[in-house]
Image 1: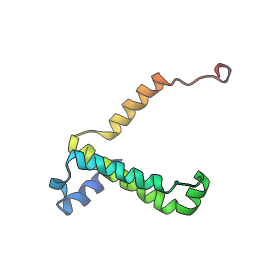
Image 2: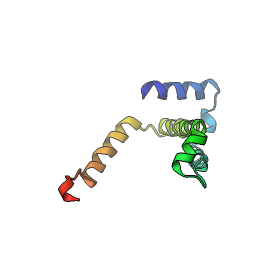
Image 3: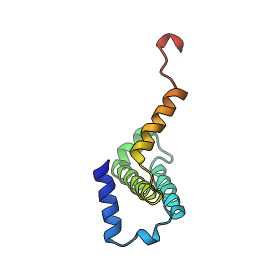
Image 4: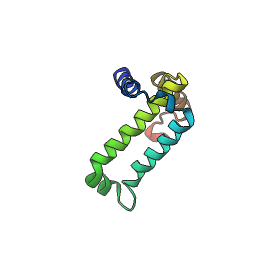
Length: 102
């Protein structure tokens, strides 16, 4: 994760884009890119969408992560740590159940 984070920040900084990336616009960009990801699935089954748009789906997923990393940098959030903490919280909320418990 550190390598990806460093590459995204380097790419942004080489272009001197940081002053233009505020929290609101980065959050908005995440939603817009997520909408572009979703557009690949519109009116198709999951299987059809993946078969016909796999490359575009991968690129939209990457765009989402790029903006998320930039937002985390702006807010000084350690994404890796937050994901691990959220997984712990979710594990308590949604414990693993045995087959007999279903």
